Image (cartoon, rainbow, N blue to C red; front, top):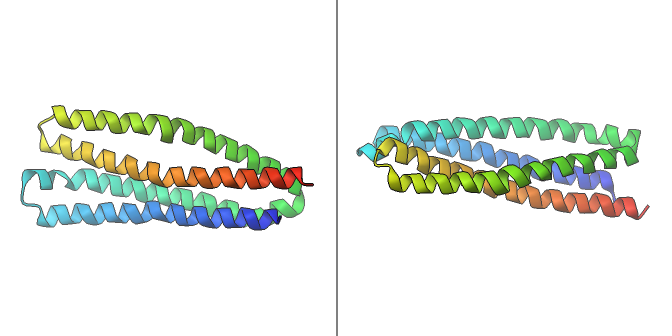
Length: 168
């Protein structure tokens, strides 16, 4: 198994995933613009600022993740050539840290926040707050969707690294 090729393939898939954050961010901004220009009801007008904020946050998140992944991708060849055993060890450690963070944030905290936002929609009558809670649910749901796929890719990538290490 070619570890370097596996690492590069994983990073390229992550770049695509990171681009999805930016794409959804742009879609939130377009939705915000449409609510601003075409919204006629109070509820439609209430979505302008929450959608704009979510769009900017998604763009920032996507850009930051894209930059970090790109930086890692460009360093893979050098790090692997220097000491491939160390490269694999560091990658496994990074994967473990990232999967631990996913376990806490994506699979525990975000579902609780979505549940809280859904419950608050029922008890709040203000269009502004309802629009904010609906936007939070969509925003966090998209993050969970993208990150759950990223987590699955990480699990496979780690399994590939571990199997390559054990076969040596």
